[in-house]
Length: 92
Image 1 (cartoon, helix red, strand yellow):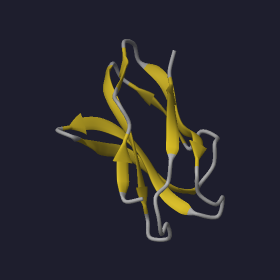
Image 2: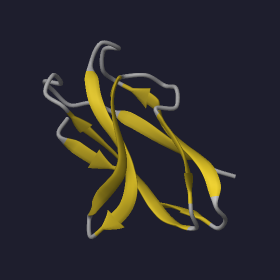
Image 3: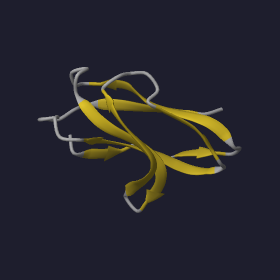
């Protein structure tokens, strides 16, 4: 897994937002980076990032202003093959 961006999500009010993998096909001991940011062409320019082990609980939570946001997951060096995943971005 090199890097992958999730589709964008729009907020219409300032709100608490969380981002998490609903599922990921790597060992729980695999470390990766998760980020939330704004779309930049075909990429996601992250403004909030965290290095975490694979999990299905919220890895990023924050209060975000009205706008369009994206999520990004990328390998930090110990994933040696493809990984399937589902990202869930939750906001009211």
